[in-house]
Image (cartoon, rainbow, N blue to C red; front, side):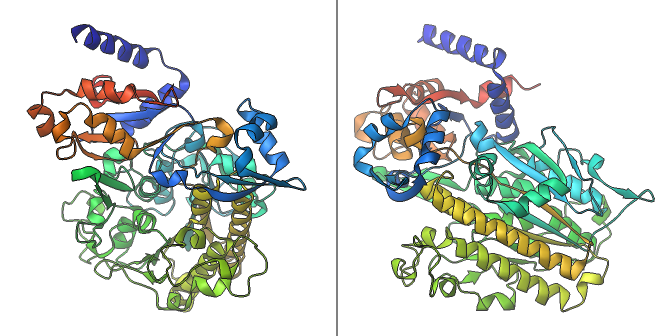
Length: 575
């Protein structure tokens, strides 16, 4: 054991001091993310997926043969090999391919999960220029805060991008409304895969301050983490949101999944977010005069962008410019979709629900559908909505409805009340998450993803026209993504490991009679593990032993993990 421990220290030292650029970026993202209770960070080999077993549920996915051939070439594979490996799952007709294939995921800091675009658009406010430097989602909040002369949230650690501001008479102009658009799973790979599918977004890239080399700067590359990073300007070390869920092992192989912003009674708790958002501060700083709107079908996105709503206060006096504000925070418009009945809902303790959205039902968009064969109305069970939820929200109709709904909310809550001319900058956030839903099921390379991407781009164009009509040039847009996503395993040859198999491998360190009762893992996210110190101490099992057990895992006789790091290793290399 002494020899093994010394060897582990040597190998860890080599990893930290002889790194590739990819390793350096990965390590920096870990440092930005690591919380005290996390003990192990898991890095799969590139193209491998560590996730839940739903990934292995096969779905009929459409491609052109040309598209598949091009994708295979990227991974040094060819059509003949692909056809041989998946012959029973492929149907070919007139150059069109239907693959009965696996799903895909995201969570790592490899380039396909990490690379995203960021653009700041508004000819009156931002330069029309291509910026090649690498920036992060965390640059957005301090930059916009500086533009509108807001206090910068305490969790924001990056400097504002003042070089992108267009100045008139040495004064930075303030827009009447700023629209933040997030394409969930809209990483660079999506754009590269469908280069002719986004003319409206391309208009923003060409005419805005465009950063094509932007990155996700944290782990895990998940919806909750990306959105709260956009909203607060902080990394997980500041805002303490490290994943979509925390998953706790229970007896007999069962688990308890606790979604972010939800407590054990399934009520909403935005105070898990330990720093404020730009919307929190700006609204209170301006005595609740700005209108705040945050819309996404997933609660973890809506809250992460908008913040705490009524729960926000400055009682800790950490924002000096707010110390003399007597107003309490108000209930911003923050809402999401109920999986059970497809109604838009909110948590009335903290937020408000716009009256106008009650008339928007996704079912109505599927009626008399003749445009998309895959999303035929008679192929979807709207009565048992949870059964087909991701097919419903992963449709082009979801993007269309969300755009039309947001326009109605802005019209009713801002324009009709003449608040679009009150010289108070309103902050409006929308996430088009249909791209993520269809991407998980079919992959960003698929025809289904192309169709959803094209309709989403079309709706971005509709939003631009709506703002131009009602605001002239007195608005700005920030467009980005929360994360990218990995390619299909059938194309890359990547391997899959389920959480349950991972936990089972760790449990083999325990005596056989307690493996279904006591667990070495306290909780886990996709790439991070908090260990159960009491059980470890009881059975004299070290973090090192668990690290080695995970590193030894093989799938189809191939090592699954690139590296498993202990948090102590990360802390010891901090500058």
